[in-house]
Length: 305
Image 1 (tube, rainbow, N blue to C red):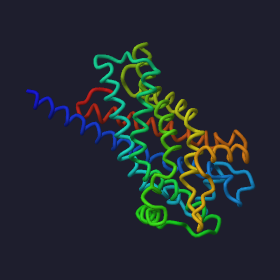
Image 2 (cartoon, rainbow, N blue to C red; image 1 turned 180 degrees about the horizontal axis):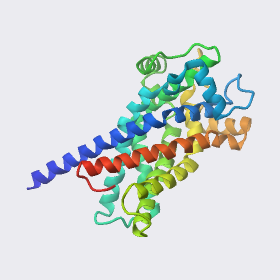
Image 3 (cartoon, rainbow, N blue to C red; image 1 turned 45 degrees about the vertical axis):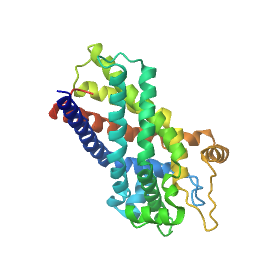
Image 4 (cartoon, helix red, strand yellow; image 1 turned 135 degrees about the vertical axis):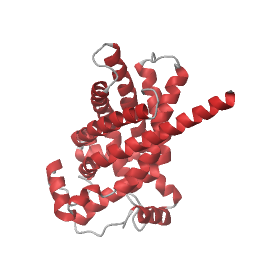
């Protein structure tokens, strides 16, 4: 009997990991161009060529002019690889911790959900950080091409090899500290807010446990996650994009140094660079992810998240 329960639990766990990965890859593919625009906007201000103001429209025009439509998907491969690990780990861990603390219902407070959401995000981000690093580097490469510079990498595997060769295995986790800071904040806002908002919508009869409840919850989740995570995202992007020069020196010593230099040179508002592209991406991303995830769970015979 116990062996049967163990096997059933293991199958359910594996199914959750699989449907989470499928939903995450679908959401990432749909919204990746917005993520690319956001990264370009956040890196604007670091280059000697960036004295003029920029905008999302100008970034898109530049990408299409230099790289064509496919340029909007430069760096998609490592992004997909990242989400094969990152999203399943954080989502399944969050659900496990939530149900472990309150197995019978959903009476956890918002603050408790925020804490377990943040912890789940940190664990997942440590595992997925190398793929995130490669994604950021490849997105930044297309910007270098537009400036007449030679791109650093030919593809994701070339990027992995060159980073390990020039910066060591530890180089794959460059920027991991601002990375996990962002992961804690974004998952604290995203998972806790989605879970709490969905429960609020259903309990107050605003909508049943269907696409309407999932859509409302994902919108609220995306906004809160963006507000909390954008400053850490800017620092994370700049830390991960920098590569050592011939003398082994980097522009930023650590995330605090990056924070100070960014504010000193570009002002406090620079920490929210790319806010609207980030929100414009997180909103559709969460809609696609949560709606497809809840549907896949239903098809697989699992209970609602």
